[in-house]
Length: 46
Image 1 (cartoon, rainbow, N blue to C red):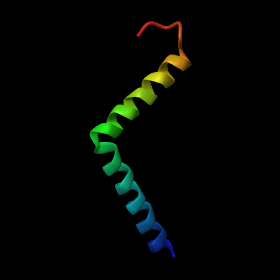
Image 2 (image 1 turned 90 degrees about the horizontal axis):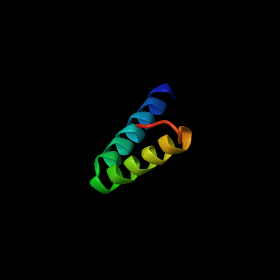
Image 3 (image 1 turned 90 degrees about the vertical axis):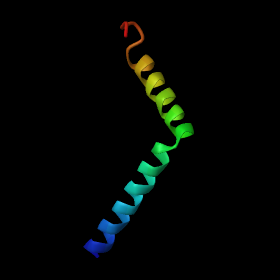
């Protein structure tokens, strides 16, 4: 069961990395990160 679980995790990680490499998803990720930074520290200059 441990080998199967490991393979599932590796497959899932590969899918996430492949999706993150797409340009349209990179834009979305950057927007989410910027929004989170602004929400966390609105008064702090960047």
